[in-house]
Image 1 (cartoon, helix red, strand yellow):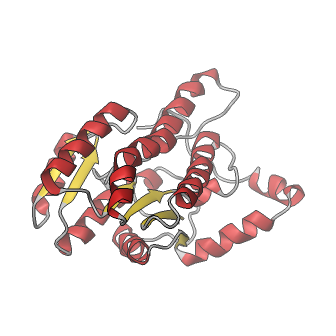
Image 2 (tube, one colour):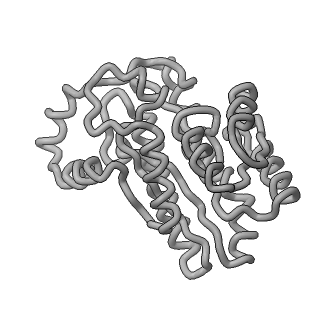
Image 3 (cartoon, helix red, strand yellow):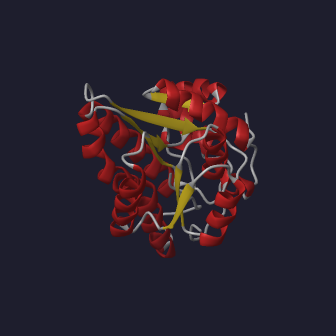
Length: 249
């Protein structure tokens, strides 16, 4: 599981470890990964890896498979977010970082596992998207674009693997109480505590659901946003709250 250092990743790790699962925990902060692994029951291995570096992901995947075999579930959870504006030349670096982490990082996370899972005839590839990928939000061009790309990518992968026994699960969270949302200064409806969100995520993963929005209330909002015509959507969301600009952390 990528993005395991904190937030949703750490909550998912706690949930799975309580079920006796052996975990491969990936993140950029070694100290946070060590602290998490020590707090969990069972045997786990950590990898201090940036998902924007495909070679490091491939190496970590090979090590995990050598130790424990092909995993039953791979969760591409790593993601970064930052407020961005296209008119600001300095924000090109933020766009690059967000797309490399959120989109290409997910592809690189899954790549080493697709063939062995297909050969075995079972497995779960889980991608964490976002309701921000449903419609483009002002001041969040990089993040919205990355999550829209993730949703489309996961759909393509799901169809590619149809009938293979490998399930592709797309989870599009609404607002979850994590460090990523803690910096937001605007209202965040239907906010879920992170441990409750993890419980619902795992339920969807166990069921092999192809696509789901969590919480369900945000799923209703997402469907309405899809139907909202541009002449209504544009003036309403032009006034929406925006995440502060800056390089993603």
